Image (cartoon, rainbow, N blue to C red; front, side, top):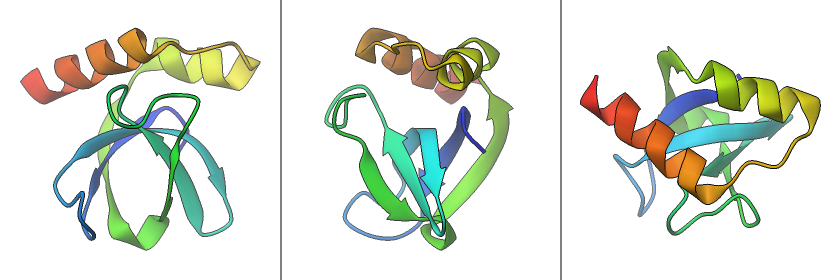
Length: 84
């Protein structure tokens, strides 16, 4: 699930596209590069997310290896996902 995109289904951020950077039990940690950067991820229940089949392989590999992901990379990946 890490490295995939998801749309929020509930809450004040309903309809917003996020990148999943981690998961813990029933929760996923989400970033969008703007209001939620890589240093301050949003913790949200998985049942309130709709996964999108698209996965950013470059960012997923960085997350897997524990490398730093910059907000600009996240914003660019979300922009590309929105266009497709």
